Image 1: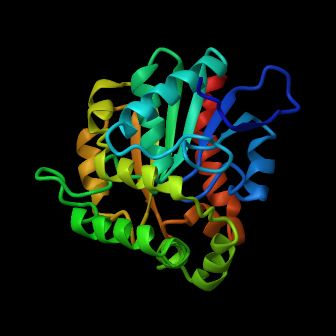
Image 2: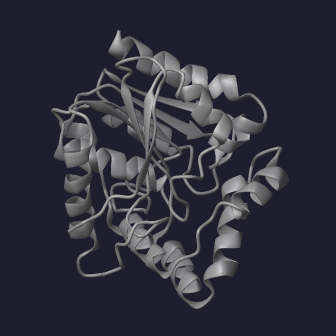
Length: 267
């Protein structure tokens, strides 16, 4: 039996809409900026979820079955969620959000992704992504020296921000070193959620960072080609961890964009 590790932050408003939030690789459900959560919880019933193999989740890496594990886990998660909900995912969490939307399209009202590429690695028809060999080198490094590799990963996420040092220091306190994180790296190599983009028509807001060292901002043009009329692709100044960057500087700019997108869907 699959157990789901999640935390609910109820909204004070009665019958508030549900926002399910997926963190990125290497983190857990507690990693989100607290100021962010407080602001979002004023209007939404928040469900913060540990991805498989992260945080308090008990799933273990199985290279031959990791995608099957993810889909089984998503079905189990869906069984515990309200009948309708919106999804928000950062980085790998964005891919997981689209995977869930594809599995349960009749229940997902909308999708918001932050610094997420539907295919994290390059493919023959998808050049604006990380080289597969670079990801493999990173995976090998994680296998041999997990803590050191995670520290390097934090620096890459903060790269490009004028607050890079502050963000890097903060992220280092949030990463969660576990052997089971290898499962998430396997997903980054294998997941390709472009089909979800092409088959689903629910509203979506895709926010990309202009100085992202992990997801090339050039992918914005590719995503605009895939997007339905109800799906918006936008870029904002910042690094891969721009949720934290704006949390330190201009939180209202990012939250107002997300809130402005979500609010009309629930009125």
